[in-house]
Length: 424
Ligand code: AMP
Ligand code: GLY
Picture (cartoon, rainbow, N blue to C red):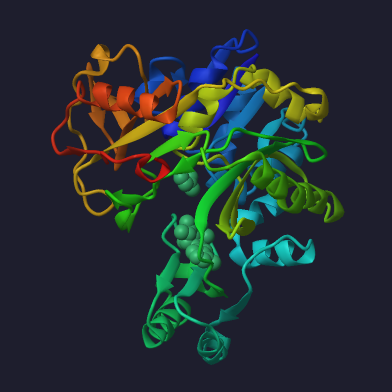
């Protein structure tokens, strides 16, 4: 079959790498893709949110399945666009409906869903410009630090954690009244701060049944020791050594099951990934967010650990036969280390020629922000490449990734040298 994958990051390169290994995948298009996907599939210069262009392409190329990487097209309703179009409705889209995507598209929607279905989450209230003074009064009832979340999509920057009460009030006004994050912060969720260890749970659902995917942890801060600014993610490890069977059981019964049942009770069509962000407070997992897609760079360690055929897995989601799918997972550890442009997540330069890629044989290099410039692969984003390795344990895998990163070079390249430091 012919498949169209939407997106251009390391997550999409990892999906593409796995999907082309399937005998079911005869032709893979990636829109817009990067230099890594260009080497194994066919890139198409098309925006993942230009639904009319996607329609024309899908019909012209006889595409039989669409796999959505990032959240944007999902929040904008690509699932519904296909479902409501007579010429497209037979083509499955892997990703939730527009309503389901609100779990990531609106923090308030997610909080209401969590409360309604009795899924453990931090206490909260939400405010608008009209109720900003009530918001300030609410802050006074809380203990620091204060957690302010822009309701809408803010490219991962919409959450502020502030120690000082007066500063929190100022930021709340900045968000609501001065539109600090544009329309995304015309509503703000103020949430109780949870003190514990963060972890993520990745689930694939067909709307009726679900499979829990291997656990993974990412490293969000730019600096070593988890310091400095937030990034999209600087590395990841799978499995997460401290997630044991007892904790996983709690996550499944208290969070995953009620989430999928909640979709059914609320009539939310959902055939895709659910990425549940959790904080483990004294061994009690509590939800801090939903994402309606896979994580990046978590995908670059989760997907390499799937032994099952990914296209077959997606088809079982589309056909609502996930229940009978046997998910096989590689018992080895996988780690990935992200190589970024100097300056990221603030200003950085693009177009740097990358050398040494051909010297890496025992790790997998997934491209995150690259493009082809003549014969050269050049940097084309903040996160540029991510180097994934397997090992009997995560230390062994990490060592291999670092050995191979030493073979890579581009001007001002940077990576964290301490991925996994907290797991020892
Ligand atoms: P989110 O976009 O909701 O994942 O928030 C971004 C980051 O803020 C998370 O990765 C956490 O580190 C932190 N965070 C979010 N909500 C809370 C909370 N209620 N308590 C403590 N930290 C939080
Ligand atoms: N790595 C975190 C995310 O994809 O949101």
